[in-house]
Amino acid sequence: MLITFKSKSSPAVMMYQEHAQRILDLLHKSPTRGVITAEEAGEALTVLEQEVALSKLHPEVDAEHANQGHSHQLPDDPEVVELAEKLHVGFAQRAYPLLEMLRAARDGGEHIMWGV
Figure 1: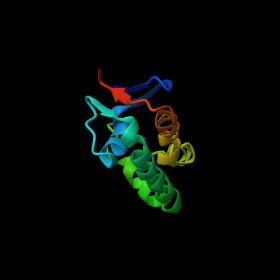
Figure 2: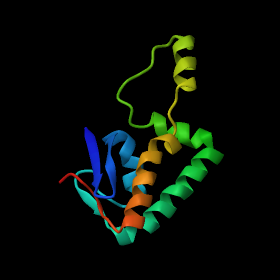
Figure 3: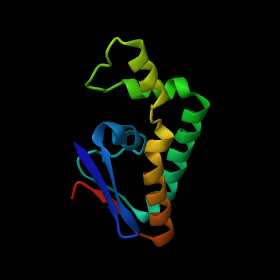
């Protein structure tokens, strides 16, 4: 399922729910419907920036989070596994568009909403 984050301060950001779930859990928000007010955007930005920094310091934890919740299995072929590891998209890359949206929302005094 896709989650579309919307704000008047920036273009929409779309993420698969399985990728957005970690972000929403950190912010104590529901994946089905929610809002990050302009007042909450600064604190949300701080929380997510800290998690991004931690994921860069401890890539093994980032990989562990990535392996949880995947509904598909990689083939046993070592070359395929190696390629998947090289192409891994980490938390920092996945969170970046939403971090930019949070900055714009904070600076513009706008809310971020999804599921509405």
